Structure formats: C-alpha cells, structure tokens
Image 1 (spheres, rainbow, N blue to C red):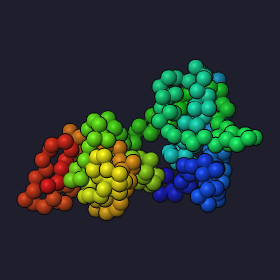
Image 2: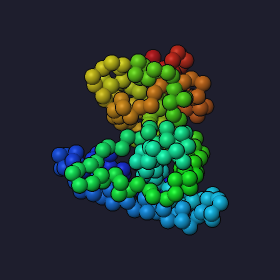
Image 3: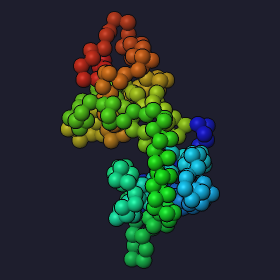
Image 4: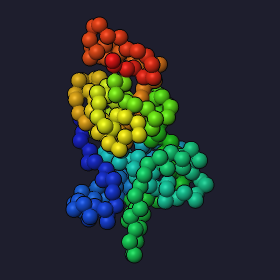
Length: 249
C-alpha cells in the first residue's frame, strides 16, 4: 500500500469549495467518501459472522482507500450518531478529533451521504480495528511532545509533523521529524504561519504552516537515527542542548 497514491481528502464544504472555485475537487473527494462508506458497509456485511468481525476487515478497506479517508468517513459517521450510546465513549472522543465541516443546504445534509449505516455495535468494532491498525504504524503524536505547544518557539528544535499532513506513502514516524530552521510561524504568538524545516529522514527542505506541527518533540522520544542526523546537520563541533526539545544553536 505504501506505493499506492490515494486521492486527498478535500477539507472544505460544498459552499466553501464553490467560493474557492474548487467544486471539482469537492465533488471528486465527496464521491470517494461515498464509495468508502459503501466499502465499509460491504466489508462489515461480509466480515461479520453474527458474533465476531473478521480481523482483517478494516485493513482491506484501508488498503483500498487509505488511512486518511477511512478515518474521515468513520469520524463523520460517529459525529452524525453522537447520540448513540452503542459506540464507546473512547471512539466518540476519537471521532471528535477530526473536523468535519458542516455541509447543509435547505434540502439536505451532504455529510449524511457518507455516513456508514451498519449496526452501531458492529461499526464500533470496526472503528476499534481501524484504530489498532493505525496505532501499529508507531507514529508520533502530542503525547511525545512538550506540553503547551502554542507557547513553544520551534526554531532550532525537532518538531513533529501532523500525520494528517503526510501523504499515505510517507505515513511513517521517520517522515514526521523535522528540524525547524525559521519562519514567522516558528515563533509563539506570531501572526505568521510559515515554518521552514529540514526533514531529518532525507534532508528535504520545505515550508509548512504552524498548524501542520503537532509540537516540539521531547528529548526522551528522539530516536538514535534522528540524533545522528541532527548531529550531521549541526556539524561536528556543535552539541544538542537537550533543553526543551533537541535544539540547534
């Protein structure tokens, strides 16, 4: 699946897409959302024997549509059924972490078109499966970062890129670690968003937005390979300070 290219999830509503002159992108992504919803329902029909859900049920849908789209469709489905106590509280809370833009008009709610209609108890099990498969990727999240991200300056520190920003082919912990080299967005409280950074895995240099960054990686979670790459970037005479994330002077 690592070599497969998946259609990106379009993050805006129909009306916003129209304003941005991006209706074609919205329509293509919405069509894929509906197809993913139907694939989940079919996978559950074929994979549930009345007692147990096939252990590879979620994995097959992920292979077809990718982690990002499956998560988006599942999150939307649980948000649409927020009243339903047959879903675990943990899964309800997980679903709320994904922003699904309201997409209603006078006639319908477009988000209901990709709401999975399988039995809630079985769908809850499917969500559990998805979350276990995703967790097995070993990605970094906010628990690996210093607290109070909004108060942190990023420049000279190793930051964690949000998995939602990465392409499916780059959905690895190695591709999440970047050395911030500057940009207005690297400073706490700045109105700017630009964060310039170098990827520790391959040396790529690019611009991100501050909102793309999960936070500053805590020293205790810096892998050995990243420590070596960091030292290469810093040069032989410079040592990481170890103060509030690995920092380059």
